[in-house]
Length: 148
Image (cartoon, rainbow, N blue to C red):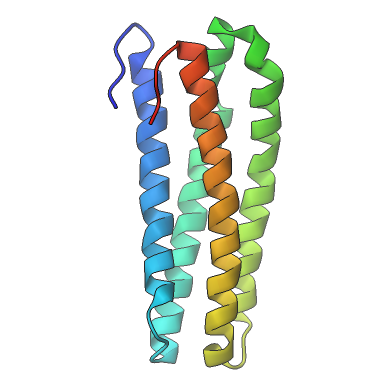
């Protein structure tokens, strides 16, 4: 979706970042669905999880510096409390993905950790998806547009 209006760059940027984040998370999930074949493959997946973590930190920093949510609140102050609650969740997601990657890196038996990493990352992905969906819904209501 491409929004139009004086605020469209804010909204389009936020939605593009959410799509990119979703794609990165789905890539890791897809890699984890494959059968475990080697310690090297496991290490590459951990590196991808760390790359998602790094991008997530940058994404959250951009959101917290201002931009789309701030613009949305200026247009619809009634959403300020919800936006603040969403911002507070950011640190939890960074800690969660760090914990997932750290546990995998500390594993002695990568074969055993494969299924554990898959389950932990799936749980992280579900919670993150719900968070990003809540942000998209807030943005849609604040800017009075349909966000898909």
